[in-house]
Length: 260
Image 1 (cartoon, rainbow, N blue to C red):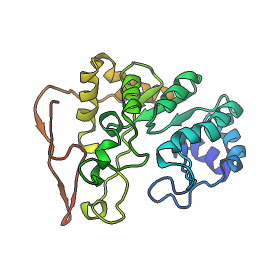
Image 2: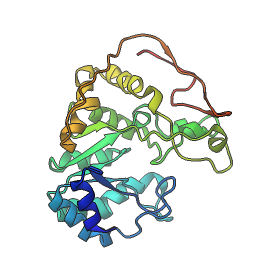
Image 3: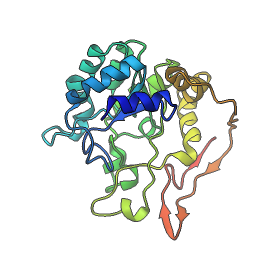
């Protein structure tokens, strides 16, 4: 990674952030970062130029349990990044654990996190109970119930450190329902309905606009969208599948009825 390229791209408005994908942490990341410390000169330049760093925060060592990858990343890498680059704005993307929530809350205002709709709704039982459930499989994977509850509390708290990030990842049904199925949940089509359901259940509707529309732009120093979306209570039937050029994609909440 060339620090000059990043600085020039940010100055020209080509992008507003750069993201670290650890090698093999998610789909198509085989050529990702294998040694984060090698990027420290780049991170120093990003800090100086005020470029946001987004992070898929998992280690990928084969000896680390898949359910512990996020916590291990915090302890091994993220604490050091935040300590060494205290003015670098960092978005810990699609967090899945209580450990991540606590780290973000304990860090300064330069550290924030996104949360997906699926990690607010399901724990790891949703992947494994009643047979393998490939349409509930994504990376990072859903964790224990205690982590889901911590995420719900953080998302609906009104804290500006947490905001919407769907991590929506559509894959064909044939690619999901296979011997080596793809990781990813297609949350985009009914994302707002999914999120607001959680805020309603947690008594946090007054904080939903901040989470969905205000906290993210404020952290990224971007203007708030001038267009609006109105959400109303109504039964909404989510299609069991979406048809795409002769193939099928199963959306998040496929076949269910939502209340918004």
